[in-house]
Image 1 (spheres, chains in turn red, blue):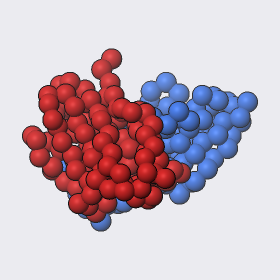
Image 2 (cartoon, rainbow over the protein chains, first blue to last red; image 1 turned 90 degrees about the vertical axis):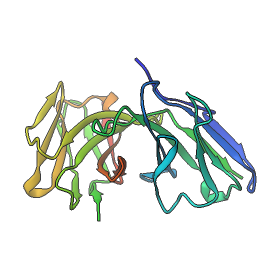
Image 3 (cartoon, rainbow over the protein chains, first blue to last red; image 1 turned 180 degrees about the vertical axis):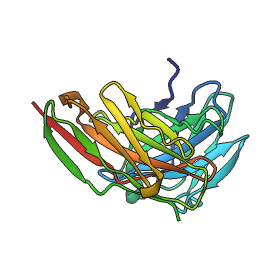
Length: 114
Length: 113
């Protein structure tokens, strides 16, 4: 069964460093998303991406964040200058088409900022 | 504003008990979709069900059942004859605008042998 994959599973970085989180969505899916979950809290929407551009972003997704689909398979989330409060689990998700609305999530990348 | 409320923070049951997880939502959209996801201790988010606002039929899948009531804006989830493997955090979610999922705070279910 096709699945969303994410790398790395765990990333430790120092405050102020740039990180890139990588995702490979399900191959025939057209809509891509990033969510984050601070430990013990609910899952929060960051950004949605369709047709090579951002469809919607939350207030969390400020200028420190960016997303890119550099090739036909990868979808990346970059944080330019990490802060302690960026420590969280970051989930990538994809969906086939907007009418379907079913989003399938990757296993997540745990980001620890020290 | 769109919002999902899961008032039960934690539920603890003994194996084989039935358990219902509550979900109340708010939305002004006439067409919307509701979801349940399971997050086991390993951390991934597992899709369980999607329900659209036009379909109020209850759904049953094995030991899982869902009760959608538009009149009370609720979408409750029942596990019948719970098992230890059902122990997880369960999230109810609502689609709002451009497919973004709005999650509730989650209910942590602990099933004890």
